[in-house]
Image 1 (cartoon, rainbow, N blue to C red):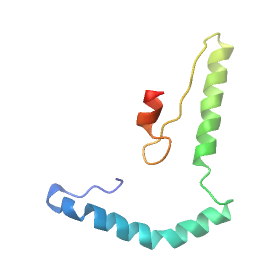
Image 2: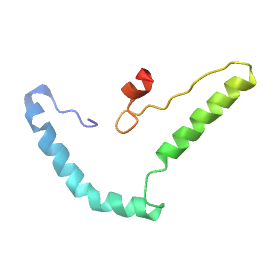
Image 3: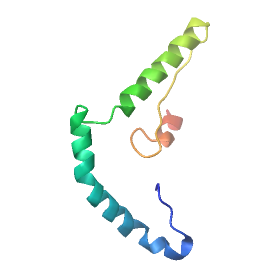
Amino acid sequence: DIIRLPRLFRFLQRPLAKLISTLRAPKSKEGYASIGGGSPLRKITDDQALAIKMALEAKGLSSNVYVGMRYWYPFTEEAVQQ
């Protein structure tokens, strides 16, 4: 989804994605292991959502804040449905 091929080469999209992910997997695994075994993005994003909720509540605004991500769970569509 990150690299979009022109329409003429769209049939190569999935094979290219598979190739890239296969080649990057060992390096990514090593990188994530060095920072505790996973991406910190979800925790950081959840912390931001909580901070927004608390800031709104401090102003007297009751709210629900949902996290949505484009390329991994929870997907944006799921957050919108919530």
